[in-house]
Amino acid sequence: MHSGFFRLIALLGFSAMLVAGAQGAPQSGGDFSSNTEAKKLPTEVILVKGAWSSASDSATPVPEGGRVANHVYANQYFGLTYNLPADWIEKYTGPPPSDSGYYVLAQIRPADTFKGTSRGSILIAAQDMFFTLTPAGNALELINFTKDNLSADYKVEQPPTPIAIAGHSFMRFDYGSPVAELHWHVLAIQIRCHMVQFVYTSRDTRLIESVIEGMNTMNLPGEAGAISGTGGGDVPVCIKDYARKENVIEREDPVFAERRFNPVPVRIIIDKEGKVKHIHFLSAFPEQAKAITDALTQWRFRPYLRDGKTVEVETGILFGHAPRRTTPASDAVSE
Image (tube, rainbow, N blue to C red; front, side, top):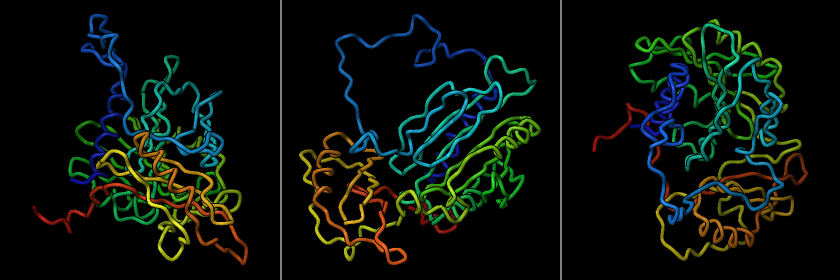
């Protein structure tokens, strides 16, 4: 099975849970349980954090750093602001990014004060194009891959189509589940080599369309687009695989005290002199992050020239065990 398909199924399941709507909290325990008799962890238990996202400094924005405040979702890393529809709220924050660079940035749904007869949900997500497991080089290719590998349980209602929103080029992809009577409308754009998605889900397509209209009030960086969105200007230029041998002048390999077999995707920002100025771990154990940080601070890169001037570069490096990449179903080899 494809990792992208598993993420799609998770997205569908979450959306269906929200839209099915307000049937009460689960009774068997867990974070959202209303069962007061559910078993609790004993007080003497020590919880140890596993692989997690982290960064070498707190001043440089990271993709997962966006927040909802005053009814606006704002993300400094992506340079976007999105006004939530009236009477819609963020109730739960998303999990940390996956080791393939998938982010749940915000999960929006109608508040208890919502007066509409139909309900829905908005998922704001991002896929890092440096670490995606699918064979796609930009947001357009990734949306087309999703359409081509959609499960037979879902029906394409509108194939990927370019549309203009807030003065920028988005790709729109609509599909639905005849059995569940649910519809998904995906609006995707590329920013800093990430595919940023707004996924609208509801049984009522009119509700979705009315909410999508509100996207025209968004603020987006000038470089954002369906096939552009590679940084530059006020942010570093993002270049996939810039850490190739011909670009690295000095390097030091990290020394790990403990052997682990997880992939460790790392985004770094290289300054104009070729030094690593910022390190962002999408998923790493604390000791891995320390060892890689100690090594990367000793790396020196060949400065990158654009229009005859040196500019900052953002790139990705994968340490540890590489995950299995997704291949189209028609090319898959039976095992």
